[in-house]
Length: 475
Image 1 (cartoon, rainbow, N blue to C red):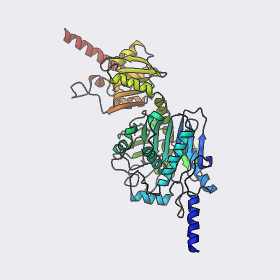
Image 2 (image 1 turned 45 degrees about the horizontal axis):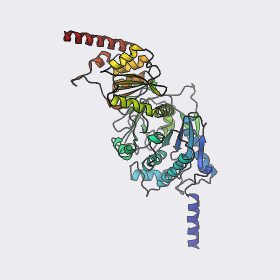
Image 3 (image 1 turned 180 degrees about the vertical axis):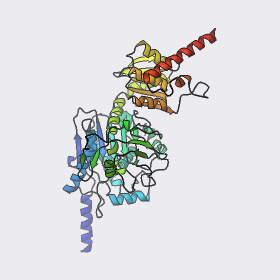
Image 4 (image 1 turned 180 degrees about the horizontal axis):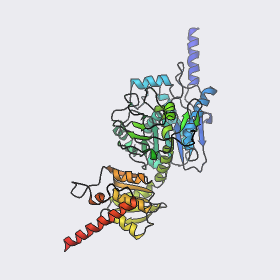
């Protein structure tokens, strides 16, 4: 009798926790919500939402469990509503207590096949393959997940060779995923052209941050020398992202799965900076946000708010990366012209090359701007070297995006402060002179000038001085 009871229990468990069949729409929490005219797709995996001492995985037959998973997913993935179609599979995600225990015993971001968490990885992969084969239709797509959902998606990235920028992959926003360094991500994914994000505009990237208040650290979400990017200024160094770059904290009640409207009707904001371990330190966080998000596992850990605290910045950035992904062939062509020495400065408009210039320093860009003051307006500028001087021209010319083969940190900050997103192949601290023993003289001429028109005027004066000096030397 006892053996019969055990066998019956095992059969029941197998039925309850069997791998879902994703051809059955009932195994999708959300399947394609959003208009087909939306610009891209979002494939989302939710974080750990259940705690159950008896069962390791969700009982999808329970209406209460399904409602909890669906309502939270609709809220968090719903930050992309109106921008993208949203797909959310039901996966056998490990419940909270067992998940934390596994994380405490091994702090790697990778999930071994022997782990109880691996069931969710298998389900994520099966669901993603079904989505790609049946619903994607060649559209660009974003992978988006938080916490355990982010870990599932990172494992998907590592195990699915079909995921690549050439096949529609734009970016993976994996908020709250610890345990990874930039070197580890490159080792796992660079052979398919997928890299850790270093700026706000590159496609084919992994985007990660782990949020905490000042003074925290040493918990499960801290990785020594870890990779992180700041979702305010999209930098990987310790330069603070100002609150003026923040698009607003979403105040979300996990118990009711509802967004809370601030009393003054204005979305609260904060500033943020990365520390030496890639953790995102949120400064000046409003009390309402602290009450909702601080204190997860340790007093200053804001793991619960990784997405909500920067949700609107995520959506804005995803839209930019999708647009640039769509222009990849034109951007690659412009970069190739520069790489092969056929141009130093290229302007793209409406998906085509609208301007090409050759020459040294900022001369090609300045010549382009002086010949036609509308040449840069609403265009994408690709230049061999972007320092603060070139950035001043781009800002005055009204460029809407700038890519530099080499870009200085100062130039990126100047562009960002003036509302122009940027990317680069190589980021440097500053642009040096030809002897490489000091700052470039043109960069010196605009150093510390915050008004773009004033910086451009100072640049012109310095260019004229150098030309006159060169003329005297010739004679």
